[in-house]
Amino acid sequence: MSAVHPQVALLLERAAKSPLPPFYTVPPHIARRIYRDTRAAVSPPAPEVAESKLMILPGPGGPVAVRAYRPLGAKPQELLPALVFFLRVSGRRNGRSLSHGLHLLMRRRAVAARPQARAV
Image 1 (cartoon, helix red, strand yellow):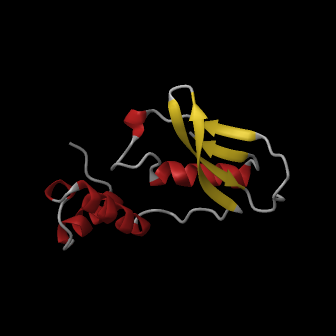
Image 2: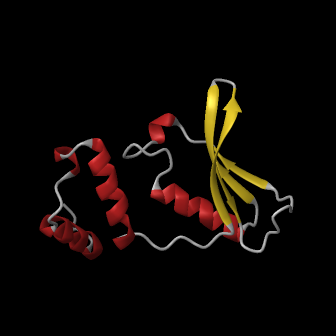
């Protein structure tokens, strides 16, 4: 068996010493809050964007949640190319349709490629 990477070992040690309860021992809304509030310690900061907004659009099977990211420097009425990510419902984590990792990825794409990025 291979050794655990030192960064993983530190993370496991930190989790073992945490005063917070394990996710499986608390109601889902509490587990989601713990998850959200503790991600900053192990996640890189998200790049700044001019705008991030959640919209509900009509879809063929009913309303569809869409989050749009507008890059810094884009004028409010400027037309930008679109970069669209479609998510499966099974991709939900901790009851959220947009995980922190995907949120970070979409913000990075909005900054780097300068499209108006959307996660559907």
